[in-house]
Image 1: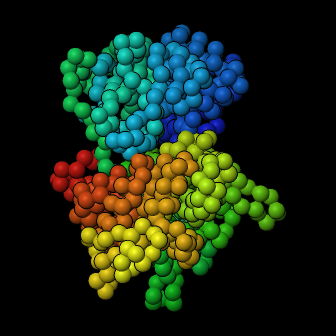
Image 2 (image 1 turned 135 degrees about the vertical axis):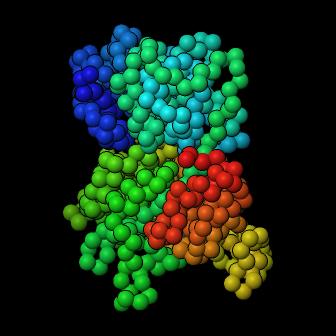
Image 3 (image 1 turned 180 degrees about the vertical axis):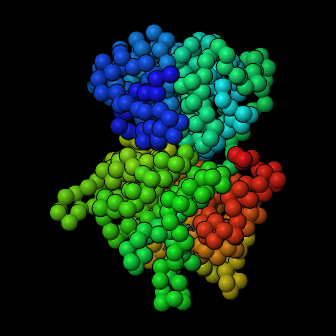
Length: 542
Ligand code: 1PR
């Protein structure tokens, strides 16, 4: 088998991860740069995240549509990923009137948001309806990584294409298609850890006839529904220490300096080493937060970019990077947009970017303008091009205790779980910026609802009070925010034991839980947390 494959990169996805995954399993990649490349390709992969409209605009501008359709209709080996699968259909509800390739009948439609968090982000299973090379190297684990807001639905007109379906809430959708040598997946094999690498290997080497198949389901049988797993995320707060090295540090209520040792920056280890360790322990995602980027110039922050590039070569689960994702002017007076900064991090291997301080500015501007959506914010600009699933908002709230709800105009919570230090029973959550150094007159619900309206896809919900305390998550805060938005919520700050993860999932129904200190200090391994969640009956990827 020739070890070279063509990759169609339309410039809006994290193609680097797919190339790294293909290199990991021994394949070289060539970028498609012309119609001729498509005509000559023997094996072609089309990965994509972002908007259907952007992808089709690119294919039309490059005049690739006809060549791509001819390649597929000639039954040459093809693998579409995520948007690379959706564009095979006739169109998408995301952009009515924009035709897809139309190889498969049907439209791509949005998940309903009334009963579940959208985007569908995380690890879910697949129910297989026929043999496929994709399965030829698999064992029995079929949890794969999804991150999408739109889905294709099985109908009698496209049933011959359906390879697998997956369930999300009460919706069953097509999670992969296959006809002869043409395959496509809604999920991301390049971000699905060892299972995904085996699927890619199967696609490249498996024989569709002799392919080992997963337990087959007939369309008549009602297969057990698959379930979306709760995610366990490892977080690496990184910053340069006083000798200029980029280290993983950890705050204690956001103070990263050791109280002793002359106040040195707490050094928990090397970013790439810790990231790889957590991936091997079973982390479902890894998040890097560059916590001093508000002082420096993000694009000049080459150590952070180098960390991402090195990590994405060995870690095949989603990587999020935050810190400094905003527009800025560099020393030469050149204005860089937030989209420029995000694009550089995506190209370095990030799957999602996390916006902190700039999201607060955007929310304040949103309310000041009477809730106008004018594409002026970093959130709108990045989600328009890369899709909302690529935009995380990192929120740094702190508790402001009040004597009664009437004492403030902000949304007050009657504390059910952790009272104040003097027994206070009510507080509101003030949003902080600049690493918890500056408080703004906006509360956490106002912030997250503005960010959802502006196009954010997920909330990373920290808490200054609980950060680094090992006393458990702020369950009141997380419940409040989970009830305030329809996008997924990641609980953060305070984890001190595996039981805290069970508590936060069972009490708040959040979608993921993140921790830092207990993993860095090796008090608990990621695998210990997942074993406890599994024992407590919570669906996790083991
Ligand atoms: O404002 O867009 O440049 O982003 C700055 C980013 O850096 C934000 O995501 C902000 O939350 C983060 N950040 C800034 N300063 C600090 C600090 O600690 N001094 N980290 C900081 C905030 C929250 C998590 C932490 C969890 C879990 N820390 O990153 O890892 O609380 O910790 P635990 O499990 O040990 O309790 P911008």
